[in-house]
Length: 147
Image (tube, rainbow, N blue to C red):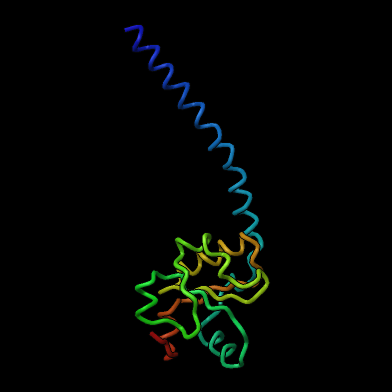
């Protein structure tokens, strides 16, 4: 019985000791999120399909970042888009243009694109937008895709 109490006390001590570093990081994460949210521009880092199409048609050099999975990308994407699935984005930052270059991230409906936009802004990219409604919004306007 005494051995069981010692073992239980040891487990509690270990659990408490490992919990401290995790809770110590919470304010840092909260501060980063707070800084991001308080700095959101009026357009919330978004761009509508017609505005993006007009800028591309005008010859503006915009890095199109398709954050969908490779199979989704293969089924159709905006011409010139580079596919970096969202789960691999941080590991592939070297494939992105300089941090001040215009980047438009997109996915199927806008959710993953928004996550990618937020991540890139938090990593110091200053000219990133999310395509509102994603590729679905693009094709709903009748704009072309390629395979």
